Length: 400
Image (cartoon, rainbow, N blue to C red; front, top):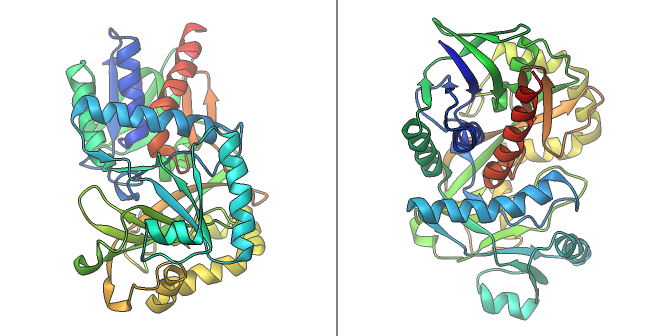
């Protein structure tokens, strides 16, 4: 069968894209292909479940603009579909003078991004969260929590009710673009589409190269390891508690996050992964490791970030060291309070010169569009990102 659109990837971004196509072009034939037997098996299903407000991101960037719009769209979607969420607010806690200075700069960024916040003194912080220690904090009231897998299930139902097809358990192994179509091989199934949109996360660079695109970047996987806080200590905080991030590092640091299911998680760290989809510790995939070792961008990242890389590796090995990173702002937690939970893996696009892509990245050919980098807050921003992707696709199709 010839489909108008084929979406590759059953995470929240692929689902939101298929949903938006069917909303804007109800007569279009749409198929979504996912290699796993369930939706949201990778980045979407392993994230911290935060609805980000957009306080961190460079003013004017896609991240900043789409996050703010995405947070509102996510809350609205949950309300319309009966999906539980809470807007608990986030505290970004400064524990020393350097972090206080960084916090002031973060407040400037939040102001430029139009994000509502309150600056708290040490006493005000202690009054709001008695178990948190710090010299001050930013309270970002519009940050929330949700289960993104539930959103994905709802979107999948919408897609099928609107006439779309979802094909699970089929890994795409071939993409061949011609002047008037794209031929796709997925498992034993052959599919033809007028246009393909790949939201393939950890495999996005490989699919782009399969499609014949000459891309400069490669995906480097970073494992994010989490702990559950024991049930006896789950009420130690009410808000999300984040450290003030180091602007020289690409990740936000270890944080405490209540979940919509009543749990409290600690994490994640950011450890180099030797398997793109290897969630257990010490996972290793020869092809993934070889791709890393032969990619100049990896060695350039290693040269520039080796200190932070060793620090994250040490936190991964030594549970007590990991705990100390949190005890800076939550001294009441003890080693016995931490129970390992499944890790997540972040797909980080890195250029050959070692530059980590910090914003959303798209690669296009006449009949394909590939999401090359969709960093946090991609889950929060999925609905407006999808709208942007679909606009690009419709423009390409109109030009054919």
